[in-house]
Image 1 (tube, rainbow, N blue to C red):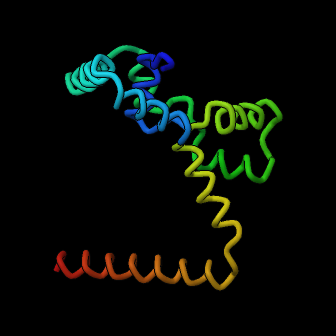
Image 2: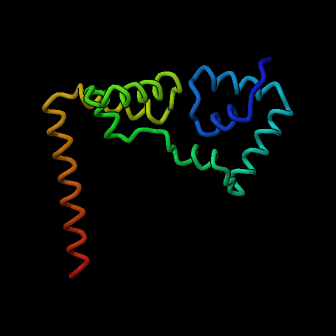
Amino acid sequence: MLEITREQLAGYLDEALSDVESARVEQALRQSEPLRRQLRGLMLARDRGEHSIGAIWRRQRLTCPTREQLGSFLLGVHEPEVQDYIEFHLHTIGCSYCLANLADLEARQRESTDQVQERRRRYFESSAGFLQACRDTDK
C-alpha cells in the first residue's frame, strides 16, 4: 500500500482530488485503522477551527480563478501567463471546483439560442415574482 499524506487526506475531505486519487485514498482508508484515526484527527482539527495559513488558503480556495476568469480562459483572451496558470490549475492540479465550473461554462457555450432565451425567461419570471412578493409585503 502506498503512503497517504496528511495533504492528500485534506484534499480527500475537500473533494479536491481526482477520481483516481480519491479512490486510492478510500481504498487505503478501508485497509488501515491508523489512517482512519489520522483522518478523524484531521476532521476534529477542522471542527475546532484550524487556523494555519495553509488551512485558510485551502478553505478559501485562494488559488482558484474566478468564474469570470474561467470564462475568459475558454475564450483565450487572457495574457499568456494567466492562460498558462489556469491551464496548470485545471489540468495539473486538477482542482475539482474549477473543473466543475469550467464544465458548466462549456455546457452553456454549447446551448442553442432557444435554450438561452428560455433560461433568461425563467430567470426573469422568477425575479419578477420575487420582486412582486417583496412589494406585496411592503404594503
